Image (tube, rainbow, N blue to C red; front, side, top):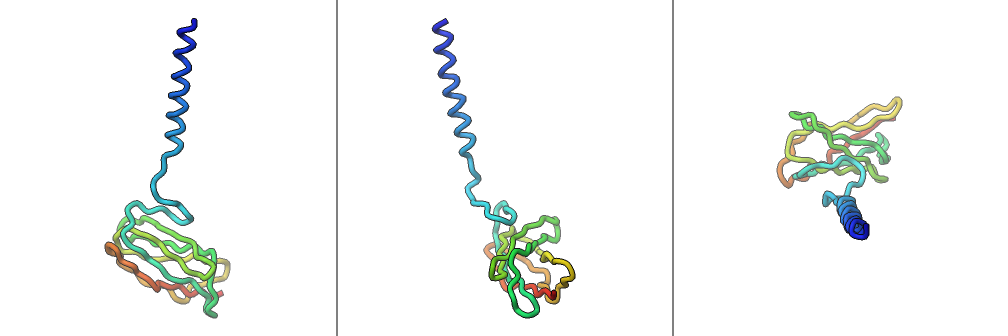
Length: 127
């Protein structure tokens, strides 16, 4: 009986240490809002403002890869800015609208190559 009890204790310790190791695993990149991108190679950025020039905070901007349909998004900051990391490809952009809003200015499709920074892809929204 004593041998059996002492044999169980190390198994419990091993099981607990294995669980702790599994819980500590991470992917290596912080996730802060927006979508995660496997192997990002370029960046799309711009601003979302009203026709009067006021920044629109909290709007979702989505980059959609034309060939695959994969979607990558970000939420605009207090100043209306957004940044989306994407893999290489050709993208069209969409912005979230609220009731009775329309897009007055929208960026055209953009091609992102390795290490590209496609910036000033701005939206203007009319209330």
